[in-house]
Image 1 (cartoon, each protein chain N blue to C red):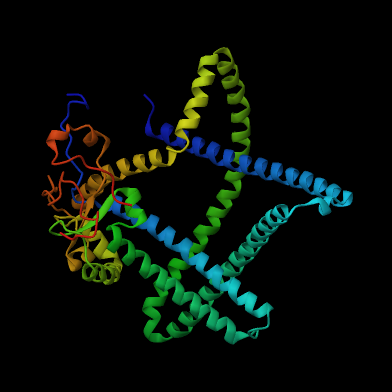
Image 2 (cartoon, chains in turn green, cyan):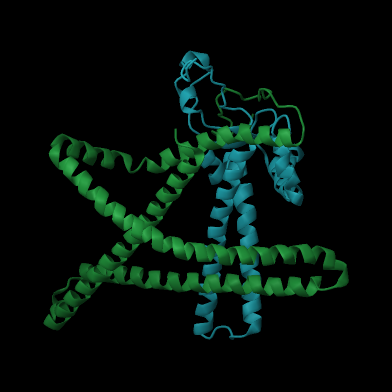
Length: 234
Length: 179
């Protein structure tokens, strides 16, 4: 029987592969987008030189105007987000500076000291995590690349042998892609509902309180929750 | 006895526990953080436009006013998000995802006064997080802000097993929460 350590290591490997796949996928998508954009720009230049603009109808011009506005708007939003981030950082630094000034006295020392000590530890931990992340990214990329090559060959060969399976897979992908988020949320809910009881058990044990046993029934246990439908209040 | 044969306790409408509520709260914090970041970006964008058009002077005063406005907007978003969603639907998006809902202790929908007391109770609960941890030991899984506002938090989604309970055993078929 596999022990907990094995399962933990498997999970770690699986996480690495997932991270690697996301990185590789992101890189590939960005590369494709760059290529498409270059092709489109090259084609647009050729059109300009041919002088076809004079044949364009008003509707075409309105369409170009809309697209141009969208693209320009997007650029402005990106600039805005950058400004916003910079503003947030600036605001945070300003507040930190003020807090530092206000609390830099003997009265606040007992409060400051533990916070500063935790902050130092946090920074140290963060730099360790960054280093781990740097190493893990390289490992993840290699592992994902290798895994994809191996598995894809096997899957393609298997699916190619069975046309019915290929059809089924296509149908399943079409039907389930929209429900994926709901499935993830549902699974998370199930896990946390179980965790609700177990966390309470552990904490009660730690506090040397008697185990809860059964919860008292809530007034709405098993009843329909219609109180938020319509305007009437109960 | 197999898993299928074991009696399953019903959780639909039962008091929601600490872990579920914590995850819901974290989801809400992430959503609010994104909203605040977007609002700050909008303030930054407007400020930079005004500066570029020379409608305001570039300088410390403009930056200070802009920062103050961004902070105020952030606070308004934070308050409006929680109070608005609690009042309108009894659940924030985070609570909806995690399938929990706030109701009055008697089972009715929460009113403005409940919501205001609950919001200020949040800050009380933040003192060493004792108010939140109270859920773990309270008989009705109430945090301090719940007790203060006369509310309880209940599970609003049936588990998959509860969905297959015959309709006759429930007063009426439970449906998913409101929009």
